[in-house]
Length: 191
Image 1 (cartoon, helix red, strand yellow):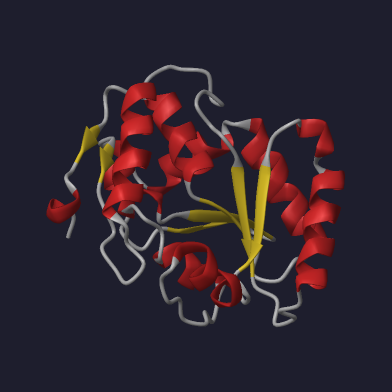
Image 2 (tube, rainbow, N blue to C red):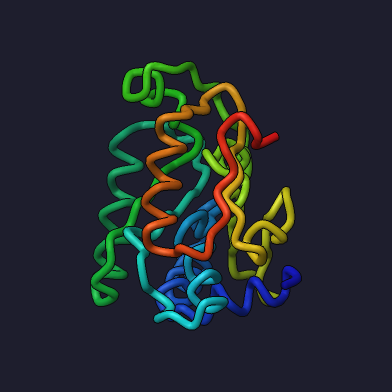
């Protein structure tokens, strides 16, 4: 699977495609659909499951220098209203303000980010470090580690300053239950 095949697989889920189209229409700054909903759709394509099998939520990142909760909440509400017909759970986060709430929620420091892709880079697993967005010419795919782990159904930890072995193991255990074809690498073997 190359990047083009990954994109085709991810967009075979009509929810991913609809979200990407709506983000493009809204011109939300530095907006991406990210992470599990893309990867899990690709896994479902690879294993001939329904494209939305096992997907808990659809993550949307954007980057707006207005770091007020009121501004982020307005975007969250607007997207939920616009996409209500999809009947899915959306997780919308302004990456410019993650550092304001992350330490209190997770007990770990978190630097101020400069872009949405900075947030993608900090995901718990390397295979979920991926985002797509629609452009005037098609789609951009951001995948700093490529898509080989997705194609090969490998779950690999992304060790870093906010890595939690317990969170990684819980996530990997859930995924392995849903997609037994996965190969899950141990937390210490992930780099």
